[in-house]
Image (cartoon, rainbow, N blue to C red; front, side):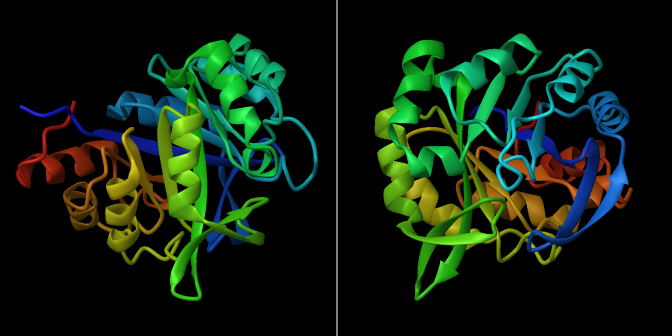
Length: 250
């Protein structure tokens, strides 16, 4: 039996509320993060990912009180990202109840940050968050919540970050995000080819049938937001579909 696949609801948070948009634009309110996290925990989520999607854009830290309140309600791993710029930020998040911390824009601006976090807290704490889009026939990373496109090749950056100490890759397709047309399987396969650490697929889930192909493409975990927030699917629905497809879940 292989390692069990994880199903991870994602809470994109702005101004203390869960928000959701399409391709990271036109964000709308989707509820209270603490209430939603508890609901997903009760549904059988394996982890919760909490991303403060405007922290970097607003040049501020993640809202620690919301993280703390969320951590008090769920007893599964909690990954927090958004506005993480230093190892001290990671220390504060871990003290607030996070189990893992996601870094994106700050690591691209200063790659040494990856090694600093991994050396101090261990690779298992560090999730490299990649907001990826197609540009000129290749995959590039974006920063600031998908707003700023870089010229950095996403696959090369993933490989470098793993060498520096990243323990997991959260691979979000900006092109597929919120479209509900399915995960970007080509992107997942490409990341799997370069990654020696677990790959979390994100962006595009719209139906129960979308999740098993992502695992087939090489993902170790599947992450979704709007289908859960809108009540279209439960965590249990996704796990039943994966089980039916022969995928081992927790």
